[in-house]
Length: 411
Image 1 (tube, rainbow, N blue to C red):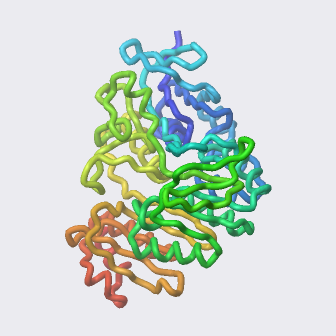
Image 2: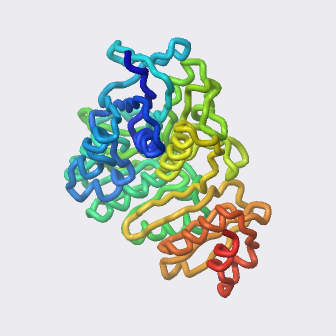
Image 3: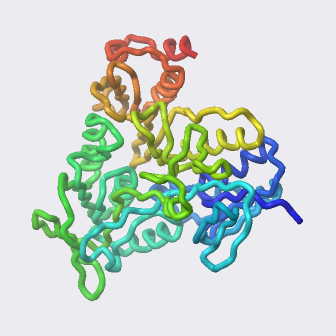
């Protein structure tokens, strides 16, 4: 009888990287990667950017070709949603009724879009963006749309707004918070990006709530705000955040909160079961409480860290510096660290010239660096944070202070 496989539920960035890294670290037992979409594992970030307008096909997004999976003896089951976990019996049950045994289990289940809880959210022409299928539907809808309303001014919403504005659409962004990307960036970066989008023709309503989406003959024609303003819309894109896919873990008796609870090594309370990626709620030296981080970097680095341990290495706490990026029109935003609880910011560079960085401090300690079209600052910020280098707000504010030398000295 063949050995039960290490089953990885979730075939996104984290799941595929875990499978690949297990093999790279010499893990020789069977591996089964299970996904609920019909495609090979693919990149999601391009879906809200160039993929909406460049006409490329899904295979351009694939993280690895099928030959890579075969060569590395990674079995892949696509379009097979998992319906339940029997931890006591060591089995995974699929939505089609089938089941199989596992030796170890990793939950890389990701997230799903948060639904918009207003009347009319189910009308034709109202969409979110999460999958390749969503991106193709949005491509087609953009080709026929004139007035585009984006609900939510986070990364996804602003990336879609930039793409739509570049294509010549009339674009309105409605945001409940008082500024764009409020949960992710400093006020200085928010103001810069809002002004840049407005210069490209995007209109913002903030803070504003949506009362309902208005339709005729089953199709969207307008969005009505809580204040009573009616905004014409032939297409509405909803991007108001995500919900972690933690239901499988919860039903199996594992601890969940805003995600699947794991320790510093990404293990759950069951020593055979792990969680990683966007769905994992983990302790972090970068946050004041357990945190869930939604980024390619986090998914990739968590997978590498977990694989090294499972394949026979010493358990090492996951402590990689978080970093993120967002391409919005011609602008690139890069973030190192987590800007939670920042009480002081320092701007280096010239926002008016379109290239600057914001250094964020909490209790006098550097915790985040946000860079706009300043990739060198981003890399220096990552090195400073990784080394725990001492940097005062006054030093960061001094344009003559050599940040690169400080980062090099701290390594």
